[in-house]
Amino acid sequence: MNFQAVRAIYFFEMARFFRTLLQSFVSPVISTSLYFVVFGTAIGSRIQEVDGISYGAFIVPGLIMLSVMTQATSNASFGIYFPKFIGTIYELLSAPVNYFEILLGYVGAAATKALFIGLVILATAAIFVDLKIIHPIAMILFLVLTCISFSLLGFILGIWARNFEQLQLVPLLVVTPLVFLGGSFYSVSMLPPIWQKITLFNPVVYLVSGFRWSFFGNADVPIFVSLLAISSFTVACIIIVAWIFNTGWRIKQ
Amino acid sequence: MLLQVNELRKTYATGFEAVKGISLQVNKGEIVALLGPNGAGKTTLISTICGITNPSSGSVFIDGYEISKNFRDARKLIGLVPQDITLEPFEKVLNTINFSRGLFGKKKDDALTEKVLTKLSLWDKRDSRIMELSGGMKRRVLIAKALIHEPRLLFLDEPTASVDVELRQSMWDVVADLKKDGVTIILTTHYIEEAEAIADRVGIINKGELLLIEEKASLMQKFGQKILKVELQKKLKQLPKELSEKNVKLSDDGLSITYIYDTKQKKTGITKLLSNLSNSGINLRDIQTDQSSLEEIFVNLVREKVE
Image (cartoon, each protein chain N blue to C red):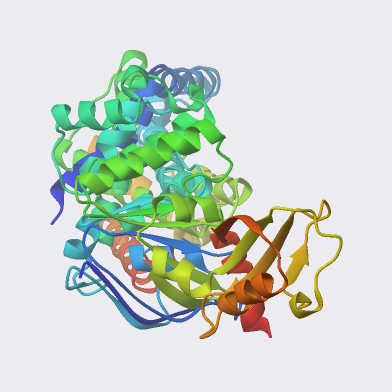
């Protein structure tokens, strides 16, 4: 195992994050605050309570998930796409590193950034609403697993993408709609019966529900189903990554 | 032997066969220049050896390590300077160099970093961002990145393409220094004078085939045409009959005769020419011979293969 190489990739990627620290830090704070002003205060004052929780607090897990998923996906996809785009990937391919080490470096860095942003949003949210976290360990577990699995997804996208347009396509057209329709800002029980069924095909529902359970103790779907969902998603991503690396798909000619 | 390439072939997904069964051996401490026109397969050959593209068939060993089975041991020995300038524009010189060393599993070594950067006249620029550097400096950053993990075998893919004359000279000096340190160097180029100036052996690649690889001197001797120039005491209006051959020419001022001959031939025809000159009663002032350059050799060789 070439730990030095993992370290080198990890810190090289993190340096990109720290170079834009202000942007990395300020943008989630501002967008979270905006969500609270619009959804929490303006709209939330009319909704009052969902499942016995104030609407402002209810949307916190969904807000965190929204940012963490999109950030993890776009960070990881950009991280591996950029060397492909400018050609510096030659260095990775000709270095004594195996694919697992490359993956560890890139996905580790992207997941760290997403986790950082998730925690910043949590801290910002705590300013606006009273937050209690009933299952803190489960909360961290869900958060970390989401960071890792969506970074893996982003890594796959970054390898798949042939141009910047494709790079933006999936986060914009797939991840964001799925998160918005995944119960981030509402409870599944608030939907009409037919949509309650349809929404169960959205994998994000299980993640948001499980994450919300770790905060408030109630969920749209059983907690073990949520855990199963996030674990299978992670495993599926790992299998795809393994296939990509074994075939050299879109990396090596 | 440091590098051994056996019957290496590479066919791209498009069906294009870029490397057609190249075999090559390179000894420790040698400088080998691979010469060939654009699209000859030089870069594909290097990329395949370095692990950037997968070979279609054949094998490559570096210091006895097979490049895919023992990729870690093999690649640790290799440094690669790619043809295109591929660097992260927003990174600082020092960071990108430390990154390269890290990738090769080595801890940062400040003394070595200073040594390498100083040698490449980059030490003053260590804290500059890549995008602030000139083209020549960027190329030297690429060399620094390849040298920072102390490779034993360095690939320089067209190191002086689109580089000005002064920088080209300084690049050659760097290569000479590396050779002194015992680094084996394989460089590709389409500038014949480059191969002529720095290589020990020269390989000629065209259309995916290694046409030949020889000691530079013997290559020039083997394929070299020589020109014999005879300066005359007195002006000559026209060549005497005995001297009218297609390879013999009288200069416009009538003061010299040139004779082109092939050193490969058993009989060069020099004795005959000189005796004919003396029989014709022509007095000589001076005689000189010129070796043809690699450029002429190359043109002849490629033409020969086509014919």
